[in-house]
Structures are given as C-alpha cells and as structure tokens.
Image (cartoon, rainbow, N blue to C red; front, side):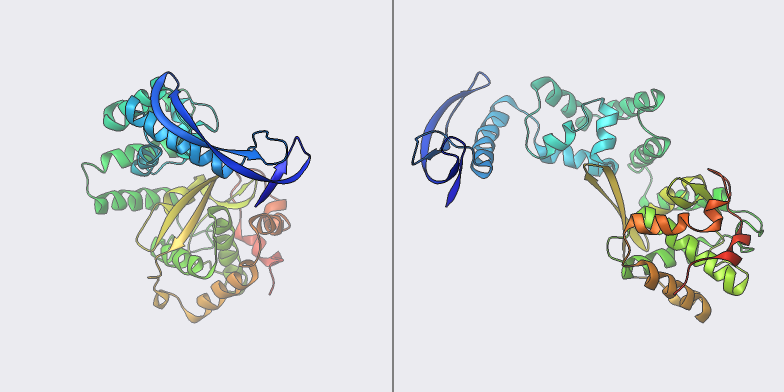
Length: 338
C-alpha cells in the first residue's frame, strides 16, 4: 500500500520499523512502536491508523501503571445519569471537547483522572458538583432535574419514577379545552402511542422534528375535524411550533412506548426517538389514523431543517411572537398539503 510522503511529494511505498519505547511521561513502559518509513527518502511518515495503534499500546500500559481512568469508565458515568458528553463537560467545567477526546482514548492528566474517579465512586460528590454547576447556570434546568431524578432512582423503583414524570407532565400540560389546545383535553396516552407509531415509520426521528410532526397532526386534525388529537398546546419557538415549556423533553423521557437516544456531534447533542414498536392504534379513530399517516407521508423524507422551514411558512408561526401560544384558528389557513 502506498501513502503520501510530504518530503517526496508523491505517493510512496513504506517499510515498518519497530522501535523501542522505554518511557512515557516519566513512567517506564518498556514497549515498542511501529514507525512507517518512506522507502524512497528514508523519512518517517505519519499514518493515523498505525499511530493510533501505537498510542493505544503505550496508553494501556501507562493507564495500568499510573491507575488512570479508562474511556469506558467515563462512558459508564454518563450512562448512569443519562447525560451527554456536552452536559458532563459543562458540569465539570472542562474544555469543550475534553470528554469527547477522553472517551476516544486520549489520556487525561493524573489530577483530572483522580477527580473523575472520585465523582464516579462517590455519588454525593457528583451531585454536589451538579448543584454547583446549576447554581452557576452552567447547566440547564432540564439537565439538573434529569440527574437528580436519576440519582433518586437508586432509592425509588423505575415504575415510580415514570409515574412521577407522568404526573408532572399531566399537571404542566393540562388545560381546559380551548382554542389553544384544539378544544381537546390533554391525552398523554394518545401522545405516547402516536410518538411510538411515528418513530416506527420515520428513520432517525429527532426531537426537533417530532415537535413539528405532532403540531401538524393536531393542526390538520383541527382543519378537517375542528378538534385536535392530542390536546397539546404549542408555542412559537425559533425553529418552529413547539410543545409549550419545552415539555417535549419530559415526554421524551417516558420509556414504555419508545426510548430516547442522545448523540454527540460537532454541532452539539442530537436527541432521537426510537420506537419500542408496541403502539396501540385501536386508541385512534379511522379519521385520526388517516391524518397521522398523511403527516408521516409528507414529512418522513424531509430533513430537520426542511421541516422547520415548512413550519416557518405557516401563518401560525409568521403571525405569532416568540414564546406566544399558537391558536388553532390558524388551522384554517394551513399550507400543509399532500
């Protein structure tokens, strides 16, 4: 196999030289590294896969000798509290990509490693750090509550936690039937089944898109039947109509019909909804199912940005202000069509 040589300025063949490594960061490691050498000019070359293998070999020995935290230990900490890399970074006050690098194999300093171990082994210390981060406004209320609830889960069973979520959602989103919920009482059971059904049909359903699916379903229902399906109330947000008070976060944490998955990329955290495929369509009338399927058909092949742009073209978004509740009266001018 040939690789590019910056000295010869062309693709060349190379040999691998095995070189001894006695020390790393002042610690005796007694191992080796493979170094690619240009056959033409004899200079060392950089090949990322080979370098990664060398680093892993050295790092593993160094970790063992210096008792440095492993990447999986950090992953397990995040999974324990259901938080993203970014959320953990904000809690700890580390650099933006620090946790991402550590989970990919980079070595933390001894002091950072010891600190992370302390937080992993001592829940009380971790919760204290979370509280400090929240007081300093380094993390959101959503992150704070999620961790605190996860911590309480050690003492309360999962079923009770889910019931607490449902009770909170019901209390927060219930309102008497009016023009802002499509003259329909809030129905969490229907919402869970709709979300499970949508996510079974839509690949890579993000939480941002889910808001628009639900809003279009309810608006189309009001347009055709003068009543919404879910009883949700929506507000004007930057990226389009959204469930009020950002309660979609709490709804996404319910786990009977679907599960929430958080992913990190260069732009931040992406939250996706994955169906457990146990939805119950018998809870919906034929006309409701038809409306839900219409919406899925129109939106399922569109990107998140396209769906947001569609909602921005609706009078319901153009004629309301930021954080203002969206009236279902705008359903009469709905541009949404099959």
